[in-house]
Length: 547
Ligand code: NA7
Image (cartoon, rainbow, N blue to C red):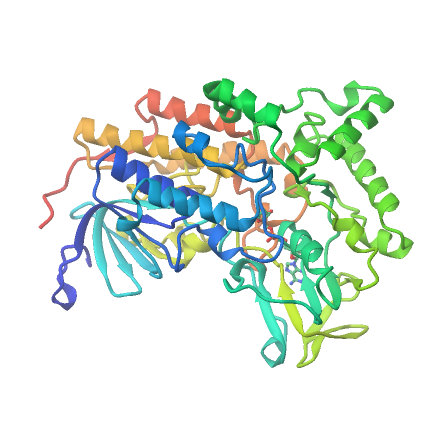
């Protein structure tokens, strides 16, 4: 067996307690907790030239959070929360990236981070219970723990249209935008894709470009965001009861910090329902519109139809050209990741914006001059792919993981990705995936904190008991998957194709990939596992002292 004690190339691997992969919200937090709180010897790696993860790469025009920032941040250090000043409720990408850089400096993380370095492989050596991690710089590390914060939404989904390489203009993907930025003044721009990234980039580019053509495959239920200052009273209420606020976030479904509705849509009169939708339309926010209005929009057809009817009427009122309005009006359920963006539908009233429905008039090829659909050719200077991500598993599977018995993770997950608690998979001991498959479908930073606390407790448990490794038993993992399937299938989300179920990437297994019962229920499951000394997990004693 090839393992960490092998002396290939005459160089011993560097011995560490833990390797962290990724330096976004999850990876920076993992590095801080493991190194600064647990006192472990840790190194973190990121293939980007800077920290920030998805917030490093997604610097496209219009990129910003669509979670209210008072919950889109860390909570573990009250002084960090109190001293960092956000300029607005939904900050733009540079501000979030500045926050993550501030975090890297504040906790002195940079000295443990190696940038511009990709992890190629991670191989578990059963003889010594160590992960041998190999980087693209040729470095080899032997670590007891592998913590992966590789990004739920990071690996890009880049469709390969015939002729793409022949295009003589510029091609960009929103999630790999050039750091130097780009100007659209005087240019004819085409945007492919109308998800969260698409609606933001379309709305931002339209006023600057000479002409914008949007190639839409699916119309979207987007609601206003209502950008603006953070509500001073709301911020004061958080400061007055900091612990209470974060308890509320952690006990909620979405982890967004707003009050989620407990009232089914059918429990109120038509007039009252309309008034509640109107109130939240004016308040802004996609998750708010889905979860603060009524309790059952994601699970009940009556409630879902009521929400879609309301949004469809708003589209009809906003878009002046009836044919464009028709094309922009979705016909499916409201069961994708909910979108919000100010001015999105209004953008289609501009004279310099055209909409092409590529479901009825598909893109056939990209030519040297632009995009050719079945019915027409569009001359363009720039093509923007806002086509999203190979979500959840994309980046994990780019690393060649080999677990016990030489099993490849790609084979282990050939039919579908599986984990226990969204964190660990059987046969891959001491490997923790932050936001791995079957993790919670929630706002990420609070969930990252819940997960890293659990990981740190599991490591402390190993230290206390003198055991060397922890991993879920196969049957424990199957039971968690069955739980996720049962909950997921009781919602409307599997009925609509999106990245949530893997349907956006050709050839990817289409399956439940999240624990859809919310952050509060998820945190409770983690607590139960810890408080009961990890039922359903297997532990092994130290094999032998590593050379
Ligand atoms: P999304 O939400 O996956 O959106 C991608 C968009 O690109 C969506 O409109 C897709 O249409 C479209 N798409 C994808 N492939 C194609 C092809 N081949 N042809 C035409 N159109 C295509 O990605 P985002 O980056 O916007 O957002 C992802 C998440 O990041 C978001 O939910 C937030 O959580 C942050 P489709 O709807 O599949 O028909």
